[in-house]
Image (spheres, rainbow, N blue to C red):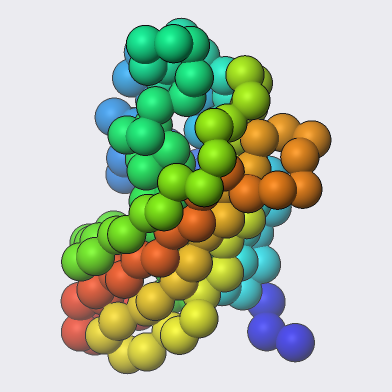
Amino acid sequence: MTHAALSRDEMEQYLDEIFPEIHQGGRTLFIEAVGHGTCRVRMKHHPKNLRPGGTISGPAMMSLADFALYVAVLSVVGRVPLAVTTNLSINFLRKPETGDIVSETRLLKAGKRLCVGEVSLFSEGSDEPVAHVTGTYSVPPGERS
């Protein structure tokens, strides 16, 4: 079994160092678990993530999914700050409940230059996904640690 390139604590510390902007206005994204090509990230309920009608906004869910994919990619390639999103597609499946959103992420392919993954988003405590996301990240050649 292959281990993650960075532990959960190492990942959190590294992201705080290279990407502090993600927490402007207060930390809402929390890495709960990291494995090789997998992770679980929680987006805490916060008024800044709501849309009219009081539900979690689509852009907030997309941000969670993109961040979770980045964590999954770094769990394989290591400290590569310039791995970037090249594609992100989301299907909204149902209205999320009021509360935290939890992501379950896994890479489908981790190639030399591209990593492809999927993210399922859930309202906390629900087994039914509220959204399904697929995405691709580009990894700069020769940058894997």
